[in-house]
Amino acid sequence: MYSVKVEGDFSSAHNLRGYKGKCEALHGHNWKVEVVAQSEVLDKIGMLIDFKFLKKELNALLDTLDHKYLNKMPYFLKNNPTSENIAKYIYDKLKNKIPEIYSVTVWESVNSSATYYE
Image (cartoon, rainbow, N blue to C red; front, side):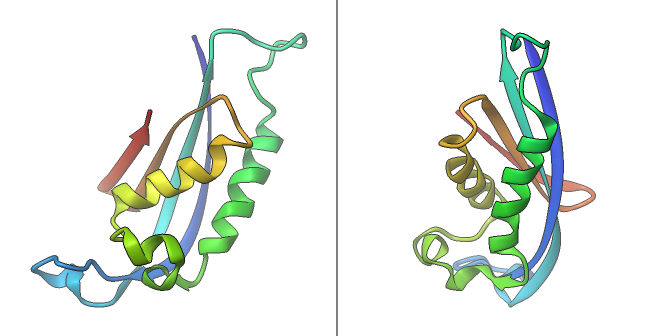
């Protein structure tokens, strides 16, 4: 099995609905996002996927989240903008363009992350 990983980042604000504590209030993060693609086979030149393509797709998506109040975005009107749901949102948005996608990890701080995979 082969896997490749790229990272990106974005800054945004959110608040967690129904949470009893500081995160219930509006606050922001400088999010780090890791996307892993995985496959048992490589293409004819020995690559799973081009890093350049993977980074381009990830960064294009992260640009739509950058400097946004996540709670106001349509997906997060119904889904609380937790790290877990942000990871799933990114995964779902990328899976049609990147069939080899394996997982998305969202870091809200250097010590805290959530991962989504199917």
